[in-house]
Length: 168
Image 1: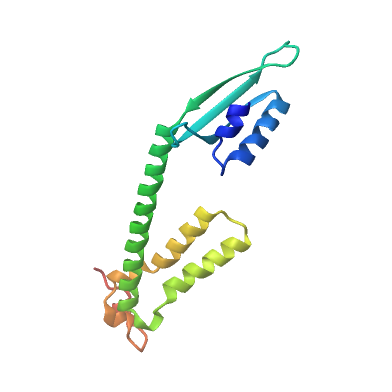
Image 2 (image 1 turned 90 degrees about the vertical axis):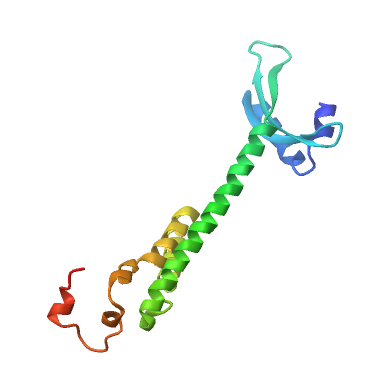
């Protein structure tokens, strides 16, 4: 145990020790943490322990697996997902800007709808992914305006019958 405790990454040490005590108390389990290799680099570990039944004093059998490659791949996926999410958001914001340009009377409306939807979602204690989706939906909820002639959107009077039933 001395080697293990000394090798734990400082940021993971307290949590890993507490989890190990919990696992021992439960008779087995697993957890993840980092240890420092003797040359200084960090290794991501999946640690699994199980109580050897009938052992007196109690003994545990376990395995430490180096999952550094998997953790690196997961970080790369997170990085690319973040970049893709930013690209999608940029595209949606560009579409919202196009809608606002076509109907200057309601400029900012799309953003306000998205903000309001997020505030309602927070009050309802919906998760962050749902809140994000609602923000996007608010930004594009008037996307149909893109296909409507701008003179109809900005016309100060009521639309005529032929303007209302216009087929494109």
